[in-house]
Length: 200
Image 1 (cartoon, rainbow, N blue to C red):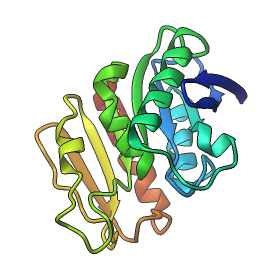
Image 2 (image 1 turned 30 degrees about the vertical axis):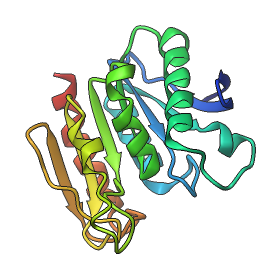
Image 3 (image 1 turned 180 degrees about the vertical axis):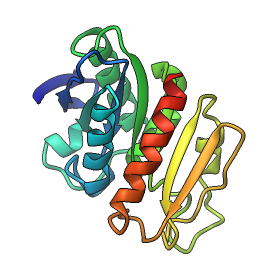
């Protein structure tokens, strides 16, 4: 695995890149607001993608690299993400089609920037549909705005809600909560089934 430090408008981001042999595409994943790229669901997604011939980059946002705990505003996250993806696709992952994604807050970033980054699909691990106990504050428009295939993998008891399926959006419900750690094998299977459809 190669660790790259990449400049963005909001500081230095870090990408952990692992290339698949004869790669068909690249899966670029972002972390959640409070966690890092070592989260179990992100690592599981990385392993499945590599086995399917998809190179993977796990991206640490600049605030995380700088050691800050609180997440910056969405516009800063999105701008940093777009800068990282652009550099990866012109460098380490050149020539590969992009599948964007992430867990929780990282999934939101991937959805909001899907068009700008030219993603052919978006993988959402534990998409936070609304703040816990606040269903009126829905973030469904971020999902609905994505015009390419989306896979949402969600815990049935996730306090952040359960997104609905849509014309381009599949939703796989797994037992467990927002961490998605109760059924890692189910998570792997969902991604393993979805990836070839996106790449077809």
